[in-house]
Length: 312
Image (cartoon, rainbow, N blue to C red):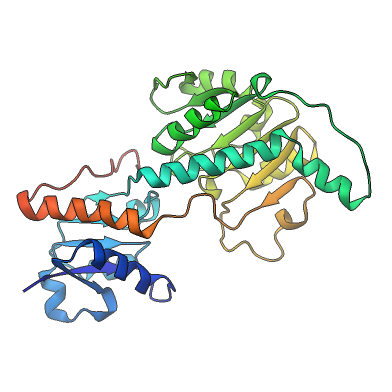
């Protein structure tokens, strides 16, 4: 008889069934069940759960959980609300590739003055901008984990000067790496485009504030593909309104979906995206989760889990 393996996600999530199908396809020896399909006896027999932004109250109903495997890379909600068992986050090379692709695309959008030309079109203006080659532009990445490293390497391959900042000093080929407060200030002062790929932790919440924006190179731009709470919203608006910051591409916000009355929608120097920079691929993610589950079933070893102190 197959062992029940619960998939815990929001009750209203429209993708729940498709994820359940992908997980079942990747794990034919398991019985993947949505949380709402479990009964009281099932609750007692679950030692591992697969999750996607779960309600902590649902996880509390599974008293014998040994660990949980998230199908997302970001796990800050669970770290804050359910740090009772080890949390394994998704590390998927396909996700890194998807994010790096988005980073390159929107870097090129800014590099080639696309917002400027879009504004010109509205005003029926024909005015070429001076072209500056990629090798004269410095792109700074905040966060050099799997996503940041892949993005840095792709940008470098396309001819940009690339720098990166992380909590601990990293070594990435063709990337000038920094750490610490002084390193951050030094890196920002030289960057034409700053890209946030940081995890959301107590240390990074509100990190990009008035003080940090003041350290940005004048007329530079920001891309936020991490979490909305990392950027102080009022500080961002002030930096844009004062024209110290040239443009902001924002894919994440403190409240999502972004409310219709939010100032970002109509700001002429903001590009709003609906959290689409790096969607998780259910097929590749399910295969990685399946490998983790299979290894656990065979040897009872829990995969490398999140450092609850760091938050990632």
